[in-house]
Length: 130
Image (cartoon, rainbow, N blue to C red; front, side, top):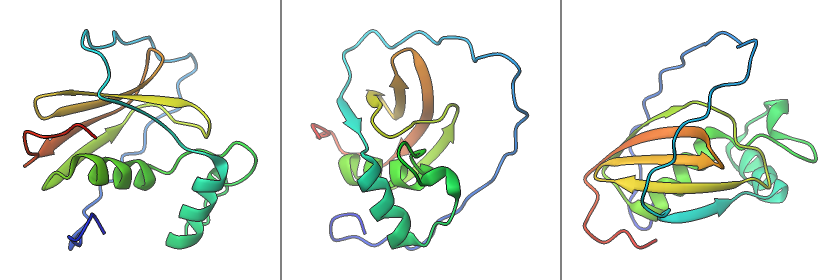
């Protein structure tokens, strides 16, 4: 659920990449200040994976990986777009601070200078002071 609206369709494409032997290069942060900063606790992730039935071991433990669907849910709640087309580039771990940037319909999420995701938001209103 997103406020009083219900998501009726979720379409996913799983793209399996190769494991890089070296760290991904740094990406320049947008010039504007972040719209919002987010952090996900291990407890919050545990509650989410229990609620949705996610059994991936990467989403458990003392420092779990933040599920992409949890980030997607948070974006949908904060910005209330009609649709989101998202591509994840780097992982986000519990306790890390994710900075959200919005430029038109492009929303990017960074941890320091590490790009975690890029998302195209369709149908967002002018008010997005989440």
